[in-house]
Length: 259
Image: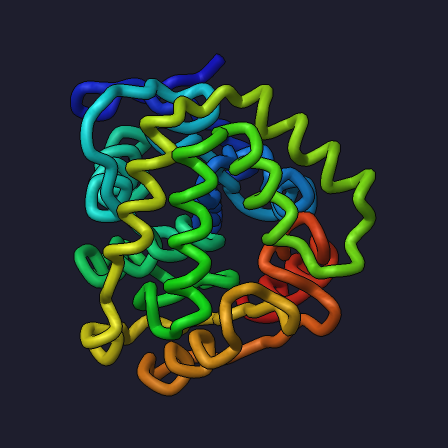
């Protein structure tokens, strides 16, 4: 299995496709791994270099103890790209991966050809609803970790998403065996994330994709669209936060048109 040594850890990654075009990098969300992007990998790998990897603490990557942060995930991405000799890429991130993509673009804009943000935010805790959501998550995590996982996984899908499919996702998440200390620290990092005042510094073409029924308010996507000068907003009807699973074909279509 391919691993890349980054600073003090090893990151698991998969690298597909030809190298004659700007690579497409996919960044996953909290409690997930690179495999959530398989439909997108299958769609794009025959036409351009397509790369997925597991963040530290997630999937098959090393899971060190300590504080996790969006800044650290971004620095890992920078070191990873240097190690695999990618000088410039199209960076696509979902949820926490989108936050990492934002931080990375702000810090290393010269390495970003285009930016794709999928159901993510520039600042957590914009609204009372999100504040309440974090309090519920923290409480559930403290009382019973497995109950927390079930609650969280259920919350990221639209209300009428088949329960049988949600159960399959829950089982896959359990198999990843992401440690509680990683998940707790990652959610803390999400809660503290704030680049809202820096968005005007982003000059690269940016695609913002948002699910109409997402737990993240549409106003989050509209705010980014308004403050990133060269941005385009695409709303996926009938989809919740977990767009990569709920609407993979529509995600591929939107990215295809954009790039």
